[in-house]
Length: 262
Image (cartoon, rainbow, N blue to C red; front, top):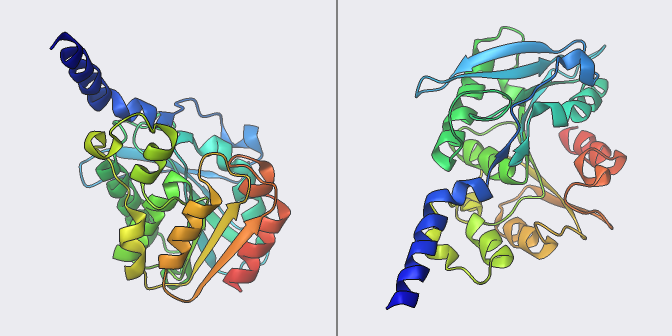
């Protein structure tokens, strides 16, 4: 009985504190000019549960294609870490909204699956209020956990195109892989069941993955890709791990995105 009690207590602690194993927000954000984005505009939008979130809007440079890309971050860091990606998009002629979720980048609130869904909807509503955005040419770009956020929004409010970088099929599949000794199915409070949602997608999707990804294995991303409706494309970056530059904003990735959007 004593052993069962200890196990039960451990599982309770894990259930209560599990989000600290999922979300790794960084609250420190430098001025955008300090990370190579002097043209970035600090913007604020309100969520439906009345949180005011800050983000950066980075305009395109020179002749624009009139596309705007909304970047949904992964589970760590903040918009500072996506500055190079936004700068490269600007060079390609795309404006970018670098979203920071609740709890990230100094924003109020604590992250959760339902909370991030609200943040994504608020980001889109904000763009609808701007007079310089062609909403019919809007693109969602989600990375890792942010790919699940982008996909959920895309199913509910389809963009012109969707780009998913290192997406996973579900948080359960990731938890079972990285914590095989735990009853993940019973413990999880946030699920991010992309594999169940992607068949309902109604826009073109480009999925980018690395074949050396140690966090989201290629076979899991392939499983998600197989469930996606056409039109779709899978691009695999050889030798790339989850956070390698080649996979986050390398030339092959940027070229693939530009070709897909054309």
